[in-house]
Length: 367
Image (cartoon, rainbow, N blue to C red; front, side, top):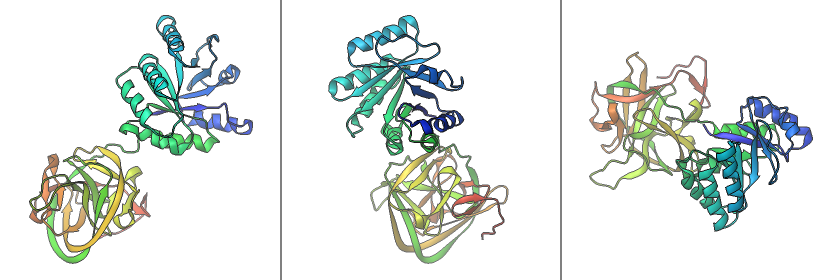
């Protein structure tokens, strides 16, 4: 999980106590200030980062954060780190190529490097992340607000290890921790046995075109019922009459649920450009994926009924065509029109019924 540093220096006095309480409760990694007496009041569960001018003395049990304006300052901090074993953090304001190079060197040399970028482009951050990859130090990027924090986290798919934010209030602290939280845990997929397939006639089906390239064993969990889903395959595999669409899932009829983040579902009919969905691999790994567009068209439909070993019934209605596929055990690619009773497919069984997509413990019969 990525970590947060909270800068208290610009927090109004009336908000400071609430922000500190929120930071401690949310288990942020560090609190930053230039007043050592304030930092001394913090519990041992949070790292204390003291902003110091050049030449200031060390504080007991503190991380010293100093501005790195050139090679001289960087060498001094490296010496303090290597020779004195003092916890050091370098702050680099990236304004041009020279300071970008300095940030890369700091990220490779110091235990902590905080970077602040003048320009809105995230290309310099990509360069620093790449330069610091594999180094023992930790990279922290300063964010102006929560929106920028979300962008920072997603840069180069990995982002910086940490985000530094000066919050307006306690809500910003909790908002930042929500952004940093790993939201796509591993899922325990199950084997489902096909009971029947049935031609349904004409209906509306949805293709989900995403902003990502799927792996060959990756797709989305889709189903007619809120408790059971089948792993629909992406169009990454060759087809005889058309090119591959590695960004697409031919997901199913528009009434279907698609399983998403935080144990929530959405109807396919609700998705639109900019929505987020959950990519799921045959081994249960997951990742957040952004929708590029939804393509709804009338097509002949096919109903697939399957059952788990525990007798839980699952249904999936998809386009009735050979090129529509689902995934089986081991990532086997299965054409839906060639499924027969006894064929095993991969799926997922949720534990709760749903209300507006959220799990809720109530009785609900779906069939």
